[in-house]
Length: 505
Image (tube, rainbow, N blue to C red; front, side, top):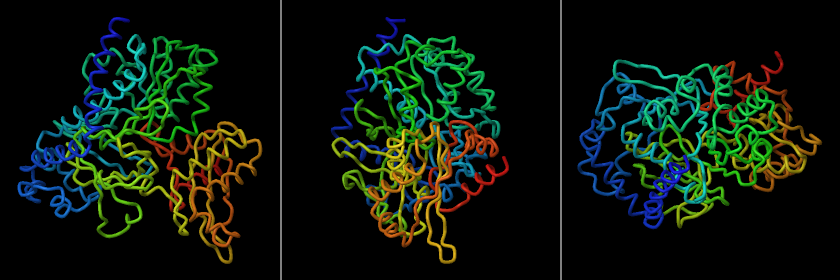
């Protein structure tokens, strides 16, 4: 196994040279991909409608094709779901990644082409390992197995030739045979759709393995870890898996969970690596061990544009290319891909922390913010405020959501927070005060509205009973790594539902 580990590590590090090339020549690489995508789709129904054969420049592309979202592409995707081909992309589309992104009832079905599987999703997974092997040349990861904690993996057949499932299901079903040997649990457990039962089976199966890496959303990884410790009677995961060395995470901000993982994995040499991937594509990897910024991956068959959030609500907002973005500004991401998504807004917002090379930090969602009174609070603000409040009071947040309190009579508005603590704050009033103070420090619009309580009163924080969010997700049949608690909302739907559940129970 040591010899095999050396071979795998050498092979993975060979890719680093290509990564360095797109870091050095980002604009050339992006322009090459733009022309390759346009040429590939010329004879599709979409390409003929917009006359891709006469598009020679990025400017022509931007002028001719409107910005898209799922609703505008949905009629085309529904035809593809019924088996029609050559609609948005020329190669056969047999797989669709079912995505909800949030806990909303509406599902999206994202087409997954052979090219997007191989050149984007799988390539991103291999690059993640390449970067790790390059940063940790003495790693022993391939001497054991990787525990992969995905979503609720049920695969469904649409018709004779088409299938759908969450992204992790699609990837698992299409992995090469050799990859199955290096992952755990086996497919019979990984593809279970009952998530509660699957967690139990996963705990029972994986404690017998030599697990060297874990991949999964922090919230569900913690749930699994607690089951494993309860089952084994061990104090921490290092006692269960002494060779554990890598944790790969994504989907939610890791900051609020960092201290919990330090206790679960008391190893100063443990490597934490963040990725940014979604049903629509694989976008970023944390390439520096001592920085949480994500390297924007530019050679995955994705052409990037960005909309400044200052102009996001305009009817036809200007999009910016990589060479036009500015550091520290919030941008919505627009992608054109080798899966047939054209000028498609994925709903995430980022800010650039570096432009040589291009590195980003995820700041939130275009729809996940609170701006009921002009305060423009985004997830990045909320996470910073919660982190500061936890540090001051010794608390650990497990999950949270927040929404506006609207004006009522003579009362001013405010924000209502539902927080489930893993560890209670030493003083809840102090926690709330620090939360408020930090929000005022990081967001001048919020601070202005809070001045003398003129437009916003101090935050109203509910300390929720344990398992509240778990029970809420379960009641909505939304258990699993694909489903996350919506952090911020500009209406009261989620908060009112959860408060009603707490009142009932």
